[in-house]
Amino acid sequence: MVTSEAAPFAKTGGLADVLGSLPPALVERGEEVAVVLPAYASIDLSGAERIYNELTVWMDGGSRYDCSVERIVRQGVHYLFVNCPPMYQRPGIYGDRHGDFGDNHLRFAVLCRAALAISSRIFRPDVIHCHDWQASLVPVYLKSTFRHDPVFYGIKTLLTIHNLGYQGRFGASVLPDIAVPVQDVMHPEGIEYFGDVNLLKGGIVYSDYITTVSPRYAQEIQTPEFGFGLDPLLRARRFFIAGILNGVDYAEWNPQTDRYLPAWYDEASLAGKLTCKKALLEEFYMPTDKLETRPLLGIVSRFAHQKGLDLVADCIQGIADLGVQMVVLGSGDAALERTFGSFAQARPEQFGYRGGYNEGLAHRIEAGSDMFLMPSRYEPCGLNQIYSLKYGTIPVVRATGGLDDAVTASTGFKFFNSTAHDLYNCIRYATTQFAARESWEQRMRLGMMQDFSWALSAERYAELYRRLRQ
Image (cartoon, rainbow, N blue to C red; front, top):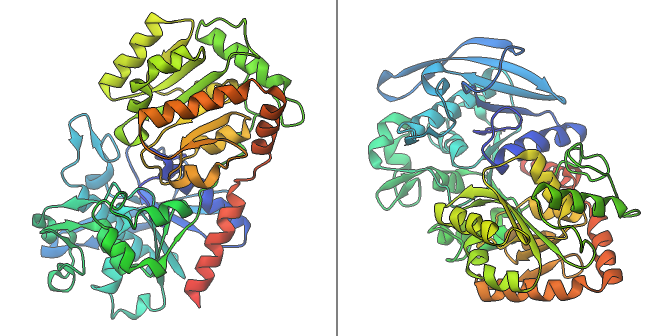
């Protein structure tokens, strides 16, 4: 696997979680897995073993990048770090406080070339599994620069799209840096995109197979609404696209063992959840006199357009008038931060807000809330709705991507149009159902019994690898 992130070494989002959980699950199924990623300055390699001292990456014009390879074996997975100080020894993964690094195209081209060198000298794979645009030059190089190289004969490529909204689009001026045969790939059927270079497009064109992180998202990206301009290409490749829902790590997200909770519980004994709700309300200095009759809504999210939190802001007065309580953890869009902060100050008995991100608090919101809101405009997979099911916290979601795949009418509530009106009506209906305690607890227990472990997803990936090897 080739990636820009993998937990616990380097993480900015869900991509890292996948690369921290899927490889060990594959190893448990008997696969041999190596994960290649950059040796960022933030990664502690003090316990790593240097297994290759001089791995030279050549780019066009004689540009030379001297790399070494450090290895950490974790849960049977070989994590191979490409150590190239000029490229990766800087603060940040993709950028710093000034924005994205201006040479990201080159940084990840070097990663891809280094991954191919590792494939020829250290770990010969049957399949190179590439993740997002940062690894998309691997299949481009294999189908162009190295198409006649017998070293790579028989190696198949799989591209997983974690979020089509991030494509690695750069001006044509980067072509000399990334060392691709321009005449072979810089055209509308290759990596060219309205005069620019689109690295994710290259991965889609040249990979042997493509997956997304949920079945519904595999369908959605083939439409103009969700295709971000690449839907015609994706429709053309529709017979080589599949959606595999991400799994979750139940070792970290389990109300029976969660180290962040004041009480543990499971589907057979829900008393601990009420303890968690009371403690959460106290943590936000909110009244606890109606624990069983007043629903508590939870949100843990980035405040970005994709996440649809502006819809919550647009109907927040109506939500308040339903008599519910709400706790919010997140940051991002400044206007949304002000809205949630102001409402928490104006109605502290009903609304609580914390900016930023706090891992322990995120767990306590999942456990202490009665419902969890995810009104995303699009969501390739999503994890919080799956965490919510395990914690007996009923998801209220927009029916898109992995939210639609994971949540059913028996385990949660869904709305279909991305409007504040539809979101409000869904919340209002859910609050009426909360009053019927017996049926509500049946819904909770059914959700808690769902299995979204990585073992199931790993089996589907392993099956796909077998098909590619045939």
